[in-house]
Each structure stands twice: as structure tokens, then as C-alpha cells.
Image (cartoon, rainbow, N blue to C red):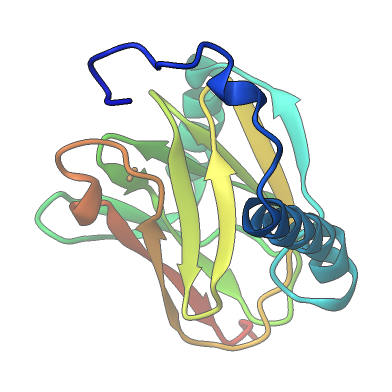
Length: 183
Ligand code: CUA
């Protein structure tokens, strides 16, 4: 039998399962189950599978809320693109836009304070990856993922996109500032 000519015996697919083949199927299946149950396990015992909420939204609505926050709480601009850096009050709802190929705006949060972070995409799938914490959240259009966050360290974090989103995917990086709480 070759890939071009039809098989000589028509019922070639009815041959009994080879022992080695069966063993590999069993190993692969068992490993799938291990990986499947690791998800809830890491949610309970790990630090990366967050409890997040998702709600329907639209790019327009999310932009509106983000812009309102920027207008109120912008403290400066950074980089040649004049990306606004926003310092919203502790305890508030904070918004982040993912789009080709940018995170908008940059957030400046206070250590030890809790925020509700709303993430949504303006176009298609992006991945919010907070480094070096290695927190990953998928960012979809028309849905907002809401995560309750309490930063524990005052430092500059990197945000990178970890879902391939096109030609400039690799440039879709930003910062998240965590500063000491204002006195
Ligand atoms: Cu956005 Cu990759």
C-alpha cells in the first residue's frame, strides 16, 4: 500500500489493535487526564489560574469606560506614542484595552490595594501575560475579563501579548507600574 494507490485489502483499518499502539493510546489518554485535572488543581493550590469573571461588552463600550478613566486619572505620558499613564484611585475599576498591537493605557497601581481590572480586545484574540509573575489571561473582543487584583510588590511589571495576533505580535508589550501607596 502506498499513499497514492488504494490499499490491497479493503478492510485494512479493521486489523486488531497492536499492543504497542494500544499502550501509546493509553499513555496519551492518561496524560490528557492528568493535564485536564491540573487545571482545577492549579486553580486551588497554584497562583496562576485565577478566578476571573467574564461579561459581554463591546469595543465601543470598553473604549468609552477606558477613556473616561484616562481623562480623570492620567498622570503623564510615556514613549514616542504618548501612551497615557493612569493612576486610578485604589479600590476602583481599572480598564485596559488590547488591540493591534498595543496595550492602552499604562496603569499605575498602588501596592497592597485592590482593583478590579477589566480586560477586553478591540479586534481579535490577544493574551495578557504579566511578567515576571507569569499570570496569563486571554483577552477577547466583545467580552471583558474582570480580575480582582491586589499587587503585592512595588515594581515595574511587563505586559506582553502571548497569543499570536499578527505581524507585530512581538511588539505588543507594555508596562504595569506598582508603586508604594500614597501617604
Ligand atoms: Cu496581541 Cu499577540
